[in-house]
Image 1 (cartoon, one colour):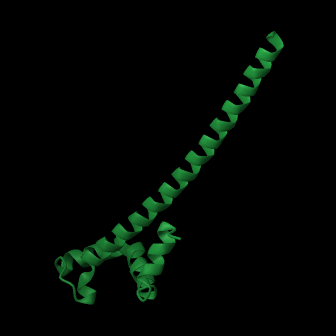
Image 2 (image 1 turned 90 degrees about the horizontal axis):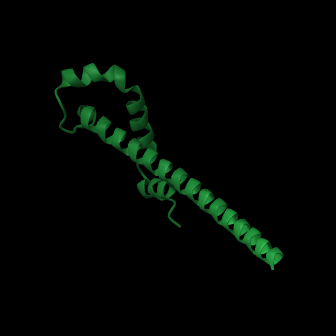
Image 3 (image 1 turned 30 degrees about the horizontal axis):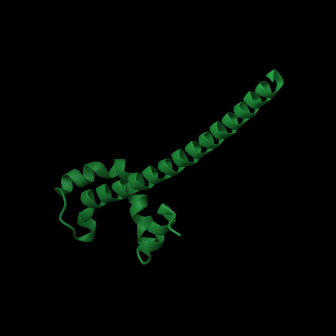
Length: 103
């Protein structure tokens, strides 16, 4: 009787360990996807900021030119992002599908 009880507890412990392992893997995958989504959202917000500040160059209303020129040296990354967006401007949905993994 004691032997069967210890075997049952051993089996129960292995099942518990497997479930914990699966839960940890699922948690890690979910966190990874969340980080990717937040990074994509941050890139979009940087793009919007660059458009708002440097909109003068494309004809959008924007802050005074003096402020734009003062910010220009600090916006190298944002300007590179704007130039990359020119390349993908013809296919905006493809970028959205690749970011959010829609199948």
